[in-house]
Amino acid sequence: MRATCPLVLAVMLAACAGRGRTPRAVVSTGTPPVSNILRTDYAGSEACAGCHPKIYEAWRHSPMHNMTRLPAQASVRAPFDGATFSFKQDSAHFDSRGDARFVRLHSVAYGDHLYRVTKVIGGRYREDFAGREVSSTEPDAPVIGNTTDELILPVSYVFDTRSFRLKGYSVMVGERPGLKAGGVWNRQCILCHNTAPLFDGLWGAVMGAGAPSYQGEVVDRALPSDRRFHLRITDPVALMGALSDEVSFLGGAPSAAPAAVRPTLAAAIHTIDIRLNQSHLVEVGIGCEACHGGSRAHVYQRGVLPSFAPQSPFLKVVPPPGHGEITRAESINRGCARCHQVLFSRYPWTWEGETRRGGAPGGSHITSGEARDFLLGGCARQMACTACHDPHGEDDRAKLAALATPAGNHVCTTCHGAYAEPKALKAHAHHDPAGAGGACIACHMPRKNMGLGYELTRYHRIGSPTDRARVEGDRPLECVLCHQGARVQDMLSAVERFWGKTYDRRRLTTLYGALDASVLRATVTRGKAHEQAVAVAALGEAHITEATQDVAGQLANPYPLVRYYARRSLERLTGHPVRVDIEAGGVPPSWPSADDDE
Image (cartoon, rainbow, N blue to C red):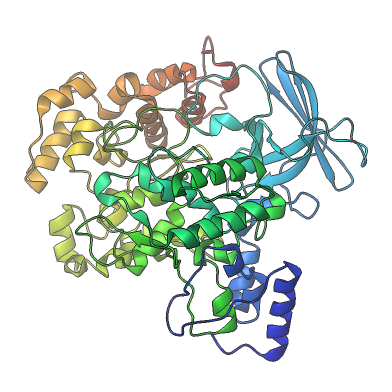
């Protein structure tokens, strides 16, 4: 970063003064900042624009930055033009008046409610909304109930289908009876979808076992014990002072008398859980410092570099025993995993045949858990998420698609140079090195996760389809995501022959019913819900029409999200729209076959 010119520095100082902050003294050069987690460590994204104009401009229009938008200034794709979404016996009506947007809910069970939209959330695959209940659409209409809390509204707009969907049905939840505004935005969404001091999200991790639940950092609790980092308190007095300052800023009452650290942390968590709101943010949406950490010191002295890892004179990040030095890639990946860590909902199962609450948790099966899954894999110490993803703008879909071809192997062969030559790659992969099977991520990052737009996305736990936990614990065998018509025995024998493996055939028989069964079709009829979703999607993509009846049976799956995948697959199998009310949860008496006319 070049030296800051006087005019730019004056603008930065004015911006910081407008937030009621005093510039901090810079105490080191050529090193990470002494602190990057406290409110006073933050400068705001505008302070980055002068020296990084191209990055700043790309970021300003990115879905990441626009993860949370204020509706008056937001570009909104959902039609607030009188559109109506019907759900069972209920309905949601979307309308606008001037710059204001409204959602009117009519519910047999929950009554009628009108909400003024206060936040638009998301922008890559869907939009969600938060709002406050009001008495009318008049500009001065009073808020009904709590004037601080913003409620999460129960309907999402999905870009892929240009249609509304019950918000809860984005994840693996069971049947929902009607439309009702759900959780509180500023108690459930605010920390991941906006920029707040990192300190605010660390209190539960600092407290450790027994900490009250809140929306702060939890990723290490969702990792195996040998991969968990810890936060060690190095100066309890300074920590207590920082907690007191932040609690006061949030409008809470700091402890009047000396107290122990754990009760003070528990009280602070309670305060942030009930008081944190928009006025306490560094900025709405994902700002530069949401990833780079508080960078005020860097703004004033170029030799003080931003840090992706938490830096504090009273806290120290401690890796597990024997881990060695924390790499830059790890720090970046763990920064991503502060938010992209979600195992979502109360659905009990993960990949690798594990359970969500088990001692060795597997990987997540849906979008938003990618960074946490990446930490489970074999490359997280040397390769950062940014090797494939653009953190400052919107990912170029064509470039991402190219990574799934042999042309994208350069990302892997930077470390695994032995496989850069076609001959070596063929011997390793047992596929044509120039064909689809010659792409590293085809096997090591298979498409088996449920995206938000009813298409499968890549599983980010980098491993091998020959891993015993995957072969014997999961359905389907990952090789059939490309070899969709394969049977269990044939696929298993090929894997054993190519890579010198052996597997317990009794376990495979338990999974699929028989070794001569079609892997995908047996997964549809015998699998767990997330496995069924993968199988029906793969069958539809491969146009295996003999599986039409199997896929159609999933229109009654207890998990509505699986039903959406079944409908998409049926439309591919039959070549016709499948007019089924997915939200109703019933199986239609018939559906069009590939030979039927409308």
